[in-house]
Image (cartoon, rainbow, N blue to C red; front, side, top):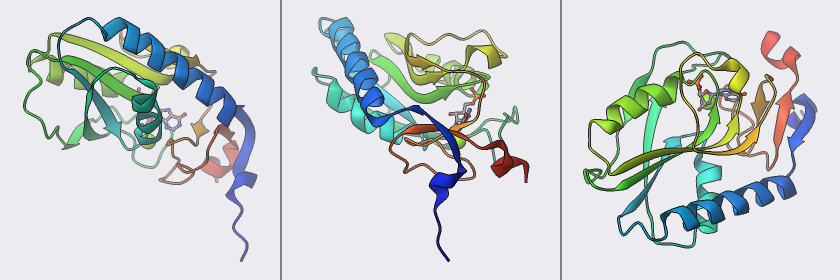
Length: 186
Ligand code: IMP
Ligand code: MG
C-alpha cells in the first residue's frame, strides 16, 4: 500500500525557506536581548512539538545557553485542549533559580498549557521568564498570556509539520501545513 500522507495537507502555510527566515530572526533577537545579562540562559523546550523548532532555534542563537526539556500532556488525540495538563517529564536541571528562563514552544493556542507551566516554573525563582513560540493563534486564547517572541501569527486552523502533530503523525514534515479537516473529522 502506498502511504502518501502529504495528500492530507490542504496547503503549506510556512515553507522551509520561510521557517528558516523566521528562526534566524528570532535567534538574532534573543541573542541580542540576552547577550549582556551575565546570567545563565536556559532554553526549555516543551516536548514533543517544539523539538524541531528548538533544534533550529538553538543553532540560531550565538550566545552561550543550556537546554532542557519538559513534557506535559494537554491534547490526547483531538484537536482542541482538554483543559487537563499533566507533567509527564520534569526538567533534569534543578538550577532554575537565578537563570534566565526562556520557554520554547511550538504553538500557543488556548494558552492553558503554558500558563500552567509558567505557574510551576515561576515558583522555582528564575531571574527572568519569557516565552518564545514559533506559532501563535491569538484568536483561540482562553487565558491571559502573551508570547515575548512569536515567529508567526496564524489563522485558526489546525496545522501540522515541523514538529507539530495530529495523533502523533506529520511531525517530520519539513514545513508547516494546514491539515485537511476530513482527516480529523473522519
Ligand atoms: P494550548 O494549551 O491550547 O495553548 O495548547 C498548546 C499545545 O496544543 C501545543 O503545544 C500543541 O501541542 C497543541 N496544538 C495546539 N494547536 C495545534 C495545532 O494547530 N496543531 C498541532 N498541535 C496543536
Ligand atoms: Mg501536540
